[in-house]
Amino acid sequence: MPDLRPVTVITGASAGIGVELARVFARHGHELALVARREDRLRTLADEIATTGPRRPIVIVADLAQPGATRTIADELRRHGAEPQYMVNNAGFGLVGPVGTRDRSESLQMIDVNVRMLTDLSLAFVDSLSRHKGGVLNVGSVAGFLPGPGSAIYYATKAYVLSFSEALHAELKSRGVRVTVLCPGPVPTEFAERAGIKGGLPLGILTVSAADVAQAGYRGLMAGLRVVIPGMGNRLVTFLVRFIPRRYLLRAVAARQRARRPAQGT
Image (cartoon, rainbow, N blue to C red; front, side, top):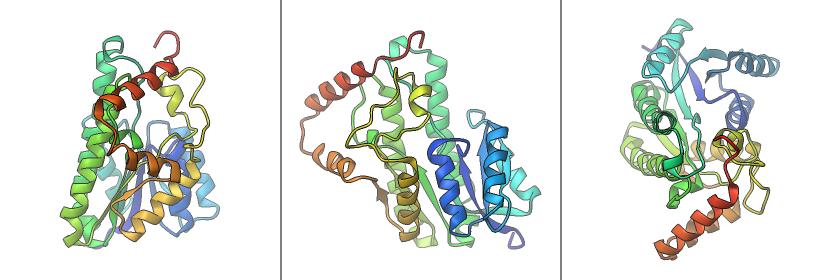
């Protein structure tokens, strides 16, 4: 439908990396569609961007854990006369703790958001992405390069995001669609609280700010890079794990996750 104007759709745009991604895309002149559950935060961000951006972002309130979310997004875009040029799949969450101690329905919901919905949204708008020579930016994690005892399902979902995005990069290149997977390490956001990490993520040499992560992701997508890993320390980690026996990685990750100690009651 060539009469629809191109927009950049950003999921999980109510906090953390999602907010910073919205800001960086807006600074570069992209019209946005912001997607998340928390309408008040989306509208506050839309108001902020409207003061400097080319157009006030479209606000789409949707729960990405629900199967009908993709249809909701598509219908709202069409209602506003828009279609995706760039699809930024940032929404996701993690849980810390042995799988046997976590609520199973919550763990399955994490798979729904981190894997199923990311896949659905990556594929649902390929025609419009191709029409506008745009792309897909999927937010993965350094965790995708590692085994994850103590956070097994989260690490596995991010391994999927990495593998899927790299394959999609190769498959869609001939259609003029760029696909980049952004793999940050520790980022000071609300992620730690949602995951149940007591005291939040400790700051260290691997920590990169949400703003710097977003900027790196934007630059990588526009350059057509396959994988973007913000921070020299994180790039070094993902390089070295190729040479470390898996059994040692399992012990190291398990010890690190135990030290994080889920908050009481989670």
